[in-house]
Amino acid sequence: MRIVVDAVPLLIRSAGVKNYLYYWIDALRRAAGTEVIATFPTLDGLGRLHHDASVAAPWRTGLGLAELALANYSPLPVLDFLCRGADLFHASALVRRPPRRVRLTATVHDMTCFLMPELHPAANRRADRSFADLMRRADGLIAVSECTRRDAIRVLGIPEARITAIHSGIAPAFFDPPADAVAAVRKQYDLARPFVLFIGTIEPRKNLDTLLDAFENLPASLREEYEMVVAGPKGWAPAGTLARLQKVKYLGYVPEAHLAPLTAAAAVFAYPSLYEGFGFPVAQAMAAGVPVVTSNVSSLPEISGDAALLVDPRSTSELCSALARLLESRGLRHELAQRGRTRAQAFRWETCAARSLEFFANRV
Image 1: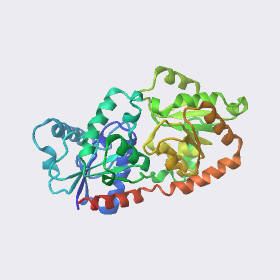
Image 2: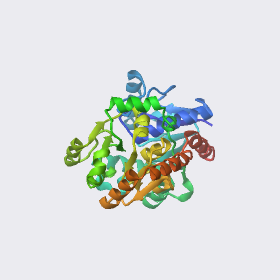
Image 3: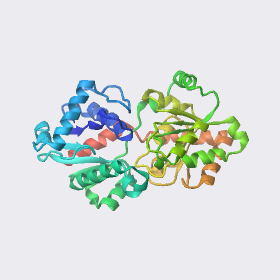
Image 4: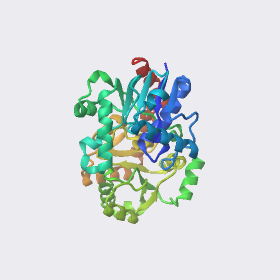
């Protein structure tokens, strides 16, 4: 069996999909070897993960993006040539003309552009519509959660037998980051007070305004004891949301190496997203032993299980109440932290890779 995984998102600015591909390809290769798991473009090794930059050297990045352009816009069967000898091609949203002579698979990350189009720019919606056409033709699909699987079946009309739910994993660094790394991050970002943490791209779907409203509505005593910390790149959020970040501690983009100790340093992790296909930040916070408040919608109850306080993400009062309960109760924070560590053990990349290889074997 030989699988070619479309790794183009590793060469560009990307967030969740890039995170998934980086750790998934690494885990697949550790389980099956590079002779089984190849990539398009060819990446013999993966460099440091950075969401704003390529994981490959500049020359390899330029060549890879040129190969993508040639495959997408040239009449020549470029990917048929590059994937010769392969049994499967696992596509991403950037490949428009997958190879015709091998079986086609793909990963479904979420259905948010179809379910909440008003929260996304037109370019995102166009890209997802194009990828949906590819997914309908695929011989098999991986969904990153059962929620995403059901949504893809309902929204795209994917036959149930062709789509399999395989949970994503959590990077090893998030499982109990060392105390010295946590202390170093506290010092670097001037985090002297205990804090409530949000990590994610600043975009409407993440529902950051409701979180800021909820924090502002906390009793003054709690706001004096705890501060609100927001980390993540500025996406396509409204100007008003970006302006409100000036009233809390906004860290901007945080390098991948700092995310695990930053998460572990938080007193509470709050993530009131309106829709998630998997919800990496919630799973990562649980692995790091941080109590979580998150939404009772989409995949988030599936991922968090009994290890988080679930709220209606559109209710400022529910979110405020949940934050207050946690911040006022050391015992509840400890209980949820322990449950989170246990729950997070289900999301190991080794497990994801093993199930993915079974998925591939059943389609060769």
